[in-house]
Image (cartoon, rainbow, N blue to C red):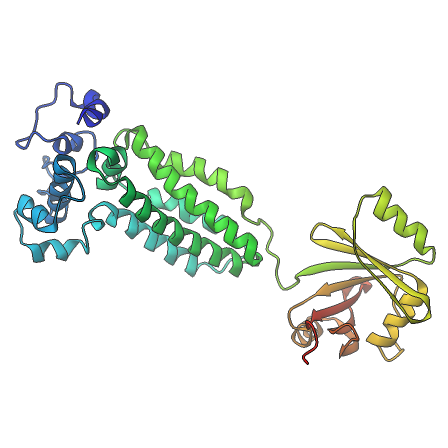
Length: 364
């Protein structure tokens, strides 16, 4: 057990050995497992005693070779008493973190604020609250000696996944699209386990988990969308351009907005849609504008020179919501030839808005 002695050597130097004389007992003195009786402190609980016995056996004879009966016998408790505190052998290592992940999940489920990214960071940092070094930290440092590398990787993956799911759900609830939410969740799950592993290897009894979680949070934060997407999935600015070719060439070739789509319709109508990150710039000639006006309106709400088109998931519901919020409905929702549901409104500040819901391909 040279790796344990090297890790704990500085703290053990000059310290008396406990009755067991084990590396785990020595680990107590650097804070890995708080089971030593101290003045003014009650004797270790059965839970702590069982955890100490388990880790001693993992170090002495290996994780796979140690049974629950072995652990109970070493701890001086019955097999049924073991299950009063732990659901399985691996739970001896993971119970402390699992409790904090459960609190993490509950915290994110309870938050309803608009700043989901801030909620995720706060919940992550809270994992360190009162998290004393325990058998998990000892297991991480001595995974090879205990023979639990494969077991640890499997169990760690489950905890990463729990954190990832909780984060993804919170970010999605806050307005992030599904892909960004899932990617961010995976990053935060990795960040939490990476911080705990770094803390353990740095000497969990001598350093702060909070510091490592803060560093990990800084690394994961950039993939969390800081701005909620809300109800609008896409911003499309529609610009009427009489000099269609020149305008298209300028924004596409000079400004550098690649052409994503282009269409032609009756009467020489032409439109090109240019990509601009999460938004698009739609350039339409006068014939196209007249065509759209015939499709979207009854002819009594002609397009302004600049009109904002907002993609929504439910046009009818969005029209009702905006109407109640102070917008004037210029044209009610109607299905277009290209299978979208469009409506036109006049919003605050005089902006003309088109709300559109993509209906997908027509059903046969």
